[in-house]
Length: 99
Image (tube, rainbow, N blue to C red; front, side, top):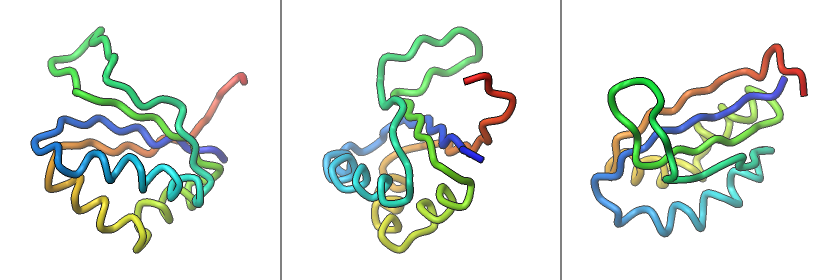
């Protein structure tokens, strides 16, 4: 079953971003992931705080998404992101989809 990785990020130190974007994109593909969107153009319709950036990536399976997130290759980028931002990572199954 497909799973979506939904990320909300507020950057506190931008020094990690350039390397992260260039290196993590091919790594995500290695684990069957593909970006659906990666943007700062966000409209807050409900809630209290809009993130600076949002990302949605689709993975073929839950296991692929978890393997990506736990991989040794991703570890240094995850650490850089965690050190330089406040992020929420959500893993959501694609259930009851009509398409």
